[in-house]
Amino acid sequence: MAKNYEGCAIGIDLGTTYSCVAVWQEEQGRVEIIHNDQGNRITPSFVAFTDEQRLIGDAAKNQAATNPENTVFDAKRLIGRKYSDPIVENDIRLWPFKVIAGVDDKPMIVVKYKGQEKHLSAEEISSMILTKMREIAEAYLDSPVKNAVITVPAYFNDSQRKATVDAGVIAGLDVKRIINEPTAAAIAYGLDKKINCVGERNIFIFDLGGGTFDVSLVTIKEKVFTVKASAGNSHLGGEDIDNRMVNHFVEEFKRKNKLDISGNAKSLRRLRSACERAKRALSSMVVTTIEVDALFQGIDFSSSIARAKFEEICMDLFEECMETVDRCLVDAKMDKISVHDVVLVGGSSRIPKVQELLEEYFKGKNLCKSINPDEAVAYGAAVQAASLSEGIKNVPDVVLFDVTPLSLGIYAERDVMTVVIPRNTTIPVKKTKTCFTALENQPNVKIMVYEGERARATDNNLLGYLCLYGFPPGPPGHPFDVCFSIDENGILTVSAKDITNGNTREVTITNNIGRLSTGEIRRLIQEAEYYQAEDQKFLRKANAMNALSRYTYTMKNAMKHTNVSSKNLPMDEQKVRDAITEAENLLADNQQLEAYVFENCLNKVRSIFEPVVVKRKRARNDEVVALDE
Ligand code: AMP
Image (cartoon, rainbow, N blue to C red; front, top):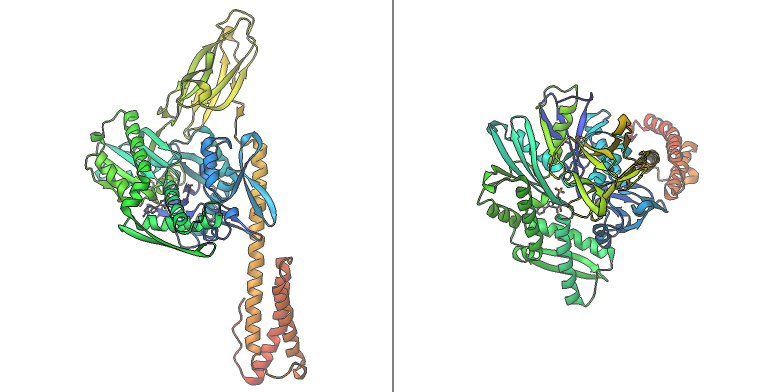
């Protein structure tokens, strides 16, 4: 594989509910899944805003129940989509945070940060999560990280892929490659099982995560991974299952208490957390309980749910998964008995009923559970990142051939979708189609580019358009070439060329509908720096306050034995007591104060206290108290 950059590169699985970061360890010759600051190998894809600070990951998720309107999750469900997309409209109804339509119908998330209303795009929220993942890697590697491979669901369309690259750029990353999640999992599985991988093996990757469902059929032959077909559903995952459980218990609460909690964001959030826990429990137990204190209007809620009931309320979702599995095999033109291994990826693939249906479908084949479903994607991304990097020699050579998730084409006369690159074509790919003008003396042509499987062009998703000008007057049927080129990231470039009379013009697609412009990206990078600076400012103030508070406590402890009234105190000890009072007053009334005020105060109290301690020590032959820095 062509190595295209030097230095360390990380693999990031930017998930809907959780994200994971991994790196190839050259010395050990293996991938390391990196722990975050809480010691967890996966980090919630949550960002929260408060009056004082911005929180990302575990800290954001942990406070979600008390700050639901300003805790953003599921940004991946919005990325590269329009506000008026029915899927987005549906999601908005379920989220506790507000989403409004921005410029060009772009969905904008509304939060309150430091008392001010902020409008953020899904790219910005995703960039914050990516920044967190980068920082987790930097803390572990003890060096700056720039290069990354980021994974996306296989069915992500062109706009969603481009938006993910934009998110990476805003996070200060150089996105070396975007690869499909199931393909990354196939790499992890292929390397895990390399001893058995003689000849060609057909691997079916079943990836059911928190918000998305993705399947791929991958053929592995030595170092070559070829995706034969992929299919998926952008709206099928653990959260949809959680929603089913939430609805079930909302109804139960209504029956028991004659009260409807569905309009109360806080109650719903707390109920959802309890449902998610119960769902996980049901993967190993046949019945579980659910308890939420003071769920609504002070009423405690307690109930139980059996695995059979859980399966009943989610059965149509599970069956939808199996239909997608079938579609993928049809697209790959492969019989299910030719599949050698079925690999489970994504947290929701642990659900017993899902596993049972899969085993049944694949005629009793044992499912492969040897790779961790939460980490396989980041693992594969890290291998791909290392194999693209120049400095790294020890990494297994992996050659990837992925496929396009959707057909790409142009609008032809009478709204016909003329496909230039059919779905599931191996990428990278370049295809040219010769087209003709429809009218007499037509001076120019507007080429509308669509993606999707519908016969009518306008029923598909409009990606953008380009114009070709200056055809000479003449009858209809003037020829021109339209060239579609898809790179390794699955990103499309379209150009058009007038081929008559050696008169050539080439235009690269100009209007990428919904995509951030270079100017906007620049602005968002500056904003990301602003948030970063604000986070650091917050941390500096919190650290300075903590240090001052600890020092004051130490001073108070040390002075405890001086039980005389303050007017009888020696001059320097009175000074210490005054300094303690001053520090305590500052700490109590801290809202408007900057970090340096606490730092200066600490220096001042230290300079007053330390000589007193030394003096006392000399006087009483005491030990100097241990002082916190
Ligand atoms: P992922 O996006 O792959 O990290 O998957 C996260 C989803 O998996 C969340 O919806 C979790 O609730 C779900 N999940 C994790 N563990 C389990 C489990 N043991 N049983 C059912 N669902 C699970």
